[in-house]
View (cartoon, one colour):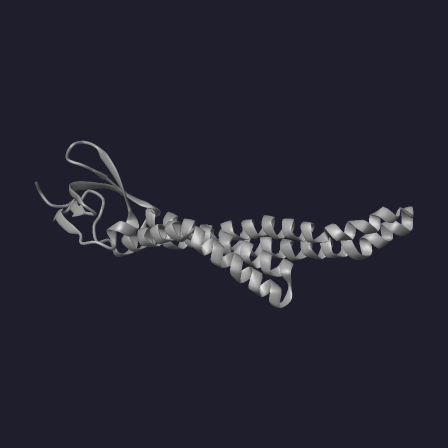
Length: 210
């Protein structure tokens, strides 16, 4: 029940933030159109009407704030879904990946909305491409980490050979790195995308008797 409650709470937050976002956008749109006109009629100050030029900044601010809230809520929902079956490490990796993709999509969407029309679509696509290239290494490692956590070619406690390392004992597998202990006592952090692209030799499973 606790897991169902966590998923339900995350889903509820997504819905609430989405509704509040729609309301906030409506208020901003009203303020910079009818609202400014009402203030001008009440005060007679012409500079008030000039505030309409800043409406785009208010819209962007609302998009960033509530977009982030929605991304975090969606990521938390996936974390709650995957944690019972795959464990905390896998769920955390998926949550981090969703946040990275969500932020990239958010900024690409904002760029497209600001540009408007065909230019907006082109600008949004360009921003998305830039973000994709900038985060390519991070996303590659995060996806590789999720692959390792889901497929489990080796587990914590196993002794393996991989990525040029020999007889290392796996201590932890997270979204970005696999942490292992060398025979000389040093700790090594191996990028996950290096592991999935190379041969893995499992010398001893954690549950094997010495």
